[in-house]
Image 1 (cartoon, helix red, strand yellow):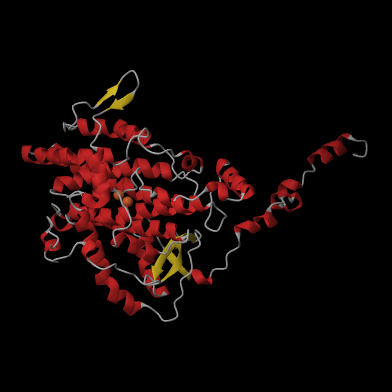
Image 2: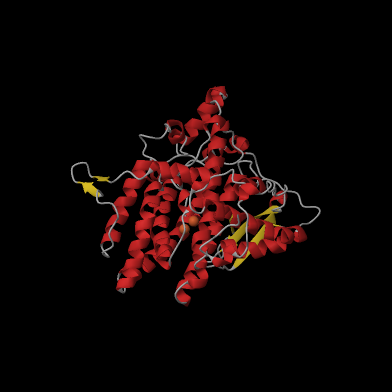
Length: 127
Length: 329
Ligand SMILES: [Fe+2]
Ligand SMILES: [Fe+2]
């Protein structure tokens, strides 16, 4: 029995119910590779990572990205990078940065001399 | 749309949490308790991964199937403005499916496998899309109330623990607010229109009210316990809480334009401050999940035909040296 729909365009397709058809199999990678999308909202702002698209080439990825990530709001530019070409750090390696916030000698706030100056001004070394 | 509150789970596939490395598990749970996100290549319990794939995948399927009952009305939308809005909305829903499939992919299930499971009838999606959209007023009720229900669910989930899902949901929720607004606009225009228009929107609500009450899933009293999923911030709000929140926000908006909710027992109890209502028919709910709803067969057949019809395009564009890697985020 063919699918009967309220929508005549669907009925005209004369589709069989899925359970009466052999299993459909999309082959692995039939939906291509993935590309990371970077989006710039305004001139002067940075490009930010907004997500991925599946595409057969960088050119097609850009076409899809314009639809997926640029269809509302502002956009001035986009970049596309094949996910394969991104070398990402492991989250497990984050501990190499664990002490970075403590490195006050790299930080302007790590340099406080006002106390010294005040003390000096009060002392008799100050003439 | 539309990750409903109800996510189908095959209990036989549950994995044993006690088999996990206790130190790693403790570290993982502490991270979530601190409010930090879990990212794709982090260690995670097998059960967390399985539950997230199941949930995000069903959410993605709901978006892409959800485009069908409304998409059918694009060519018959009354006027150019409504047609543009509906096209934009339906495109958003398909876009949501893509964002969600991407989030699920980061957990290790390929998009091809997810779509295969959908078009072979192995995966579930939100039950509401197995009902027909008979008139233009159905577009109003879906866009207004089903998107509203979905927003309640998606806003809750966007505060969950899995980074890629939260990021996808943030983007999705922003677009959903447009869906709700355009649905509400159609709803109000019909409800404040001619007697025929009012009757049309009333009829649509009468048909959709039960599926809407089903949307968040059975009462918490009836469903298996979800403590672990709550602790892992996979499930963010109980079915009953979400349903109450939805009724609080939208019952007044339906009534203010003189449309009657087809449940004589629906009222807010002033003592408990909770909504009381006639329990929807949960047998029907489970029958539809099993595939016996009015449109299950049509939805799957149409989705599969779309995939079949695109096969030659995908094959023509495929490059010999392509090589899939799991997306990063
Ligand atoms: Fe929506
Ligand atoms: Fe959506």
